[in-house]
Image (cartoon, rainbow, N blue to C red; front, side, top):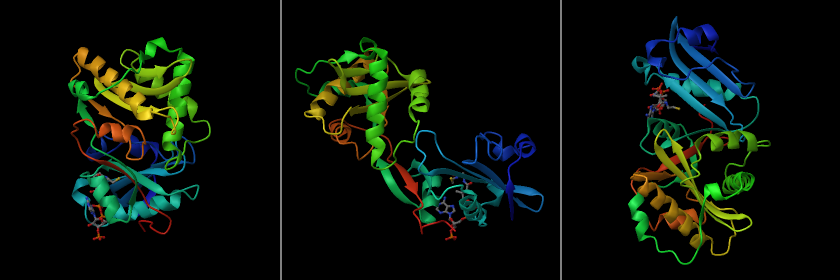
Length: 283
Ligand SMILES: CC(C)(COP(=O)(O)OP(=O)(O)OC[C@H]1O[C@@H](n2cnc3c(N)ncnc32)[C@H](O)[C@@H]1OP(=O)(O)O)[C@@H](O)C(=O)NCCC(=O)NCCS
């Protein structure tokens, strides 16, 4: 098999097995966004790409797709080996998925190891009634000045990821672009006096409710109590609007969110983020 950069003509003439994919030519953004194809004779049998995120730049996200009729012939492994060589910087490759996903079993088989896990985290909104809260006052997102709300989101996001996927320089704008598109001020709830201390940030993405819940500081006194009040109010607000289920976007390492999730019945599947550590390269 021969590997070559994916060119625009190749992308535009994608075979049927790639037509649902978001295929992009090599270096679509810059030197950190690489895309390649592998040909057996004249036939394109595999595509792969690596890219850094503008929010987290310490690893390369990695994707490989082999033509359905050409699997289990070593093309996936060869493409991974090629992608390792395309890196502009010495950063690990990484991937992610639900534990039953093909991407995860393939990555594990080729030596990738989890650096973060997320528990099953879909809940019925009405189950919030089982959360016992005290006298903690929460307010909807619309009642917090926009600048303070955004600063609280940026601060929360940065510390939550600091130990395992630190944010990149200049991450605020790309992070806030997504926030501004999807945040629901109606269902978001915060503990906020002059500043936000804790938040249950609700995002509505094509009708699905996704919640990120944490305190603004990892060492918030009574943080679990503050967060419980926020989450309970967000879930009940969603329930009142006819939304029956919500999915959290939290991690096993989140110090306030993770114990709180343990107080709710959950469904879904665990999710893993995996990386190839130095020396654990797929080649
Ligand atoms: C997953 C995928 C890329 C594997 O490609 P492939 O060319 O069939 O894999 P290879 O033949 O190179 O296999 C390399 C090794 O991985 C193993 N492997 C392949 N698919 C696997 C899977 N789903 N789970 C576990 N191991 C797998 C092979 O048995 C082989 O092991 P060995 O060398 O010890 O015998 C391919 O099935 C595919 O394109 N799937 C759809 C897209 C996808 O899920 N991509 C995820 C990768 S980001």
